[in-house]
Image (cartoon, rainbow, N blue to C red; front, side, top):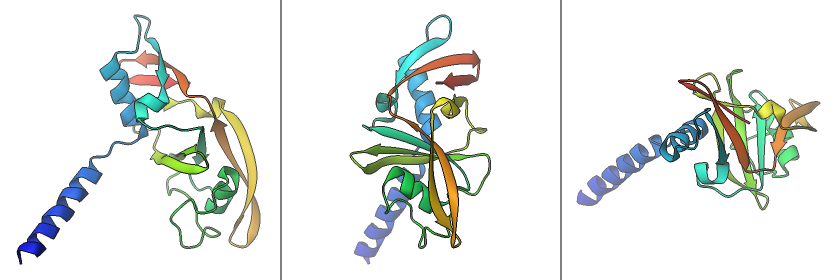
Length: 167
């Protein structure tokens, strides 16, 4: 009985810790405020590796409702994603979000869904290099597009008291 209680307490504790995980923009917003990186004009430089506490080579951004198989083809990792069948799966479920994927040595080191309307941070990913590929969705070939960025340093600008642009 004590063992069962211990297991339950451990499971609940783990669930609570995992549920407190911040999303990509929250981590960046926290980093900006904690490290006071903005100058008097509201501009500053940010190393995203430090802000997210990860090391990566490449960042990819894909809009929601993109076929998972096409993303796998573009990033070069056939095992990416948790769908049973990547040929019938789409990432995300909301047209107001995108998926951000960070790769290091051909391995995903971090990924997150970024609901850009929910946060103070506006990542200007559409200024990244556009990347195109193909996938299969529901048995038909389909063009897939995303954005790729290989630099780690970004400029952050405060555009109002509660909005930042990161480019």
